[in-house]
Amino acid sequence: MIEAYRLVDKLEREHSLSLSEYKLLIESENEALRTYVSNKAKTVATSIYANFIYVRGLIEVGNYCRNDCLYCGIRKSNTNCDRYILDEEDILNCCKEGYDLGFRTFVLQGGEGIYKKDFVTSIVQKIHVLYPDCAITLSLGEEDKETYKEWFDAGANRYLLRHETASKGHYEKLHPENMSFEHRMQCLRDLKNIGYQVGCGFMVGSPYQTSETLAMDLKFIETFKPDMCGIGPFISQKDTPFRDMKSGTLNQTLFLLSLIRLIQPNILLPATTALGTIDSKGREKGILAGANVVMPNLSPVSVRKKYALYDNKICTGEESAECKNCLSNRMRSIGYEIVTDRGDIKK
Ligand code: 5AD
Ligand code: FES
Image (cartoon, rainbow, N blue to C red; front, side, top):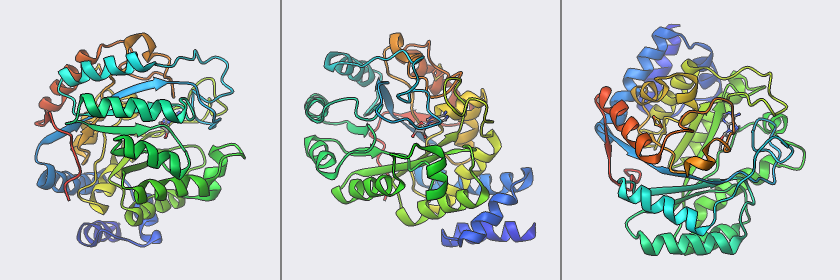
């Protein structure tokens, strides 16, 4: 047990541990250790970002998807999924609403292959011209390097592509045969080489995850050095093959958020909607464990329920302004403040 505390101190100093040390830490998690690492992580986060929380306006552009990830509610073989796709006017309306609410980052997220390459290029150009002071983030899945480059040249600054797991064996248990671990990792490297600020990430408590695969995730984050890392609990979705699998826990997610903060002090770390879904104060607890970003939903209320990656997702009935206010209040209640800012990583 003392060994675990020693490892946390080492991680705080050196920002690196061996795979077996990460594994031991993960296996040593308990309330006292969580409190210990969480206090350190919170201090590290506030030493860099003060009590400011960055917001990103999340626009869920559509739920058509060419992939069939076993965990995901918008997988292509889910015939119960009520499909939608936003057009240019819808997206620009979301941006307008978001800008007026003080958002300076827009995240266009959707199922893989949802739009033709040229459509994305053109909408990115338009947003870039209309809102030159905003960061444009894409989260549209795996593409080839040329496509990523074209979108970058059009004005996209950031790309979110969760690696999902850093273990090839585990990856293959979460995805159908036609998806490849190597290609996903290649995409992340391509995105970084093109010049995007890149976000990776994974689900906590996904089926077949072990302390070993989690240790590999932490090692991957340590060596890849993403600008952002999105983690949230796995939550089962009733129309997927993983419908009966148990969900990830609040506590393990909080513990991992804190460890990631110590691995990379300046990382952008969102307290995710999934975290807010498994616990009514999940996002507040995430911030207090070292997260510094929240991503309220800007999608039109008419489509929100349809972007059902997992069951019981929160914020599906609220207007954008309500979510923004709700989050401002939640953050204020724990001594933090949402800022009108692009929210770039502090180097
Ligand atoms: N539970 C939690 N997160 C999920 N995601 C997809 N399905 C689920 C689920 N059932 C996450 C994946 C994906 C991101 C957009 O949402 O990590 O990369
Ligand atoms: Fe959406 Fe609270 S953040 S209702």
